[in-house]
Image (cartoon, rainbow, N blue to C red; front, side):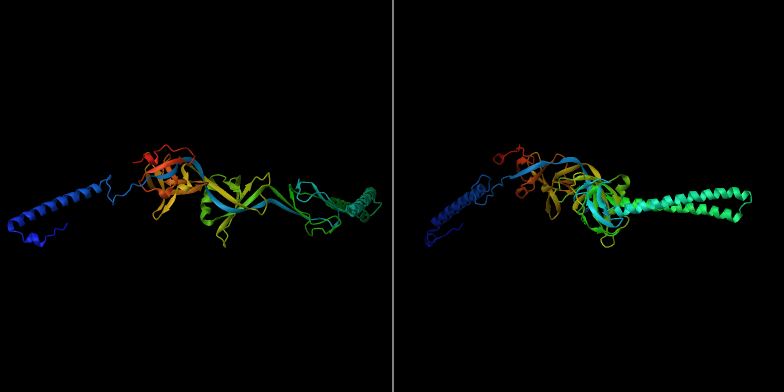
Length: 405
């Protein structure tokens, strides 16, 4: 505050001038006290000063309680389906295709007829071999008869020893010729059977590669591909860094594998790990594994890409929270935990594997604690929050924004 003195006041007599100065001093003191009181009043919570900061309203959030559950520890890999058995059907005799007994893509049983090759040439060869066998058997009978007569004459010295040995040799030769003819009959009969081509396995037929009237050559070219689809293999790889852990758990028990199509993540089919390759691939640093999976409804097809989850072990009573609750900061991962007074606490956490929409919390959250799922942007550590509803849709029981003071 400034005090001004005019020339008139200075020209006044000394007694009156001193009285005026004293009055001005008292007036200045009163104005100073009034200003201080006004400033103090402005600093009070209910004051009307321009510098008063408004209180921040509670942030509206949704929360969910941390739960516990047994969850799997797994490796998630990409894989490819492979037929358990795949057979390329080839002709074993040459000839002309006369009949086809199946439809392309049909499900076949072992022994079902597939193709018929003209059997007449092979039936003729069989008849010829059977006739030759009968001829050789007759020759053998005659040789045995002559040898029996020679055996009685040699004792009476009626024939020489050389004639006896010749007739004995004729019997041995005739027996060998009979055996040869029997083998020829078996070969001819087998060739005749090969004209009727049957399915060697249970499986699904592909498309045929020949038509009736085509001439095929023995052991040359494929007529049909048959693949067994149930069960089916799912081949996948793991890195060499995970190999030791896989081997350790394989030694304890047979590992379970869950196979799913990429566009059907919630429809997994459980199988078993049945094969671990004996070498790590130099080019990729991975090792191949194989899971055997039931495929009764033919969901999986050979050559199809799949997602394979190899279950290593089960984590008992793991703490789970929604994956959407976790946030990132410069200091690491954290979640907001809401206490009974609806105060938000920033809680650093250590996360484990994700389990669908949930994630394992290894450290930082206890079972039953409420964590914020949505509305984190409006939350300040230590600040009040308004719980609108929990993750299951239940209405909030906490105080509303109007109840906060």
